[in-house]
Length: 341
Length: 273
Image (cartoon, rainbow over all chains, first blue to last red; front, side, top):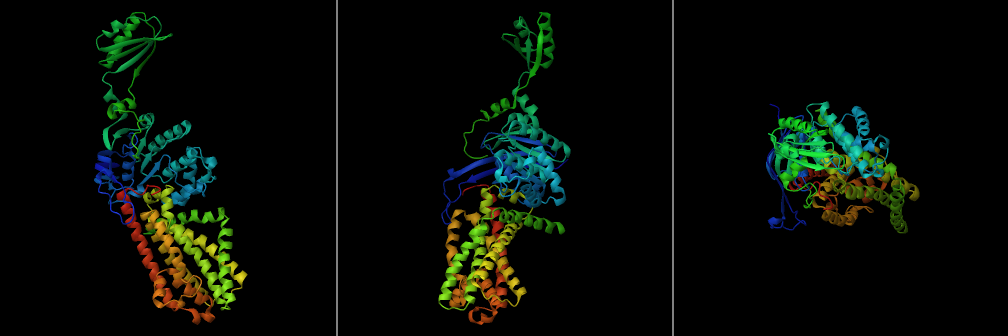
């Protein structure tokens, strides 16, 4: 069996209020502590695009910082590519990279190409490969026309795109993306999502851990997802399985031509749990919850037999937001915690 | 083995690039960092001339002004650099990189040295031309070796400061502020340290500039060296080599300690601490 790309066991991280002053004692007040991660167990397989979904302060960034060797866990252990993040940090670093949305790194005095060149060299990219890689990435994020512009002259979004490029130019085996499309325009975000899928397909051993606030992005990109809140993993599965958890009955929506009748009879059909009807000026909207999907045949037959004309028929899937609300108890917009996760 | 050397070297050169390029893109430094130091040189030079001191003393002041540029660079630019890198979001990228952090610090030092060499050379040239300093070195190679060793020890100290600044935050700035003026005095920036009692001069020797400048003065103004030299050039070279080893070792240890503590306390990404 393959070594997991990422594995954590009882991973816990507590932040303490820093001591102020050289000679002052640390406050004894234990309330000054904040638990960012609490006993997190996760396993990400090589080749997976794994998502972390959670509100602000959930612990997503803390988890990424531990995995990228920037932060030590308070308890528990974590491995990246089979290597311990505490004792084998130096061996992990050549294999990883991280990009954070809203990141402001880089030097304003250098232009975009120079910045990317500098970081690529520090990450050990051979000089002969750098130009081609920079050109390719600038194309992906549509920043080629700014390649010779000083970074101090870029907009926030353009700077974010440059940092996105920085993460890929080093060609890491395991990439950590912390809200990569945060604040980007729709077109750029879409181009980036397309690129992420293509990048993963290019080499099957590549692994990506992505945190995002955007449910649709997580749903579209991730092979598996962990929903995290207050430092704990509440659920971890494929987006489809997670959605299945909140859907007790398959639901179908039928849009019928005006005048359709017989909803009460449909509700009594074998295999139909519930049927509701809503009329609009141009259609009759029929929503049926089925005990099993096969019952949709009987529903369609019943509608047609009564002279109804079906305009559209679609299966209604629950969204990740439904899953999130069910597990966390509130939506992602609940930003009531001031501590960065 | 080759790879183990290649990455630190390429990281050092890459990191120094950002500092060197600054010199070409912000050219106003020529005014503020060449003309202004010359004004303070002029003040001392005219005092020495009014006192009919030997002309070499004016040379001491010019050399002192050039070396002050390195001290300022070490103290403020080099020392504060990791602190700035953290505030601009670069520090985490460096820590996460496969390159050793010492190579990043070495890159900062190399870039700082290069730009400051240009500044120091401008001050020296302007000083020699304006004040007609009797500058007659007999052993250029030895002079270059002393200068290189002085910079190595001085920037080793700067690399150590960089870790300490980051560890102690703004409180370190205040402490370093306190160091600035006493260092001008202890190193004999504008006068020979032979004037001091041996204990005070001995304390001054802990700062690389002291031995470095005394040795350089002896090599630049050899005819009257017997009147102002504190120790022999050979002894001062040995002191500088020792200081370079000590400061670079301490810088590495401070950096390792800083990284471990910062990872434990979660302070690598905290800004405006």
